[in-house]
Image (tube, rainbow, N blue to C red; front, side, top):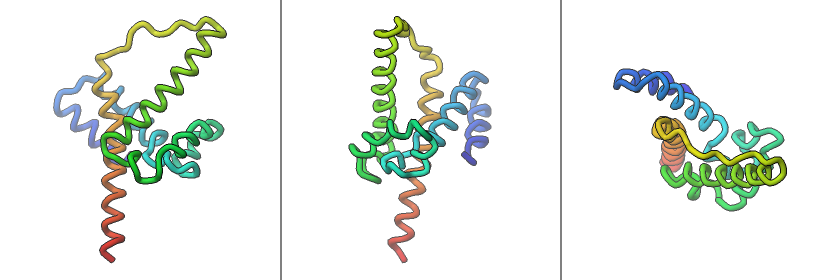
Length: 140
């Protein structure tokens, strides 16, 4: 998360609005802490951050081998977002059925690009760092 201030400053310098920077920052911090590519390991630090809810990530870890597609720069974050979307949809459907909680009618599309950027950038940095470390270890 040490790179977040630089990204926010760059966004502000490029004219991004305050709301976009807030959406970006929230998504960046959330993705850095809770949506790491290492969720493909059931015992990773990222999985432990979910505490009691980390059991939700066990099927994900069983589906994806470590440093496989979950570490792909673009498909990796997509797999975690789709997985979370499925879990959220199932949870919402249960709440809808049992308690009548309505499904949302609209999504705030003006925040979509800053949120996606905030979700993807820490993942790209993680994968780049993993590859750099792996290359360095192999060259020894």
